[in-house]
Image (cartoon, rainbow, N blue to C red; front, side, top):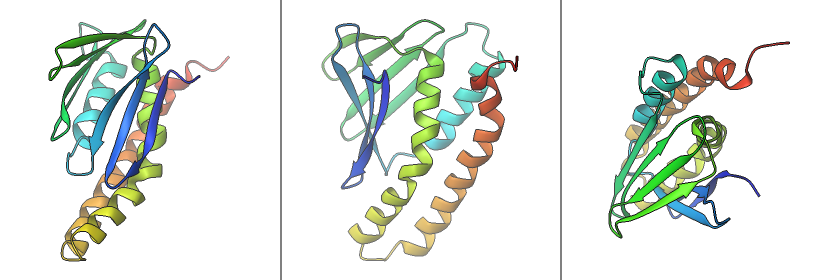
Length: 155
């Protein structure tokens, strides 16, 4: 079982799923309406480059489905569900989360874009496609910058 999954969007909602210590999964909803791409990638870069002195990756997801805070380090991650006030300890470390997000964000960007266009009857098609292309370019350029940190040193 994978420690981190990003589940394909259905009706504009995807999930970042993290495996908990008791082998269950905690699902963090990611809506196409949230612009998490830029903030997530900025946090990934700061964590991997060592600019964050505390060596913690901190992600915040706040939407109609609830607010979640993910705090990860080199060993584990912690998810706080602010609606239920529950804390989950997860087996994925910060790099596992970054890998899962980067690998799946581009794959699912098309599904998100298509959902928005269909939901709004094409009204936002030009603006959304421009935004979609900007987000996709941001992710793809981040991949080039982030992947060397995830691969580790060449032997």
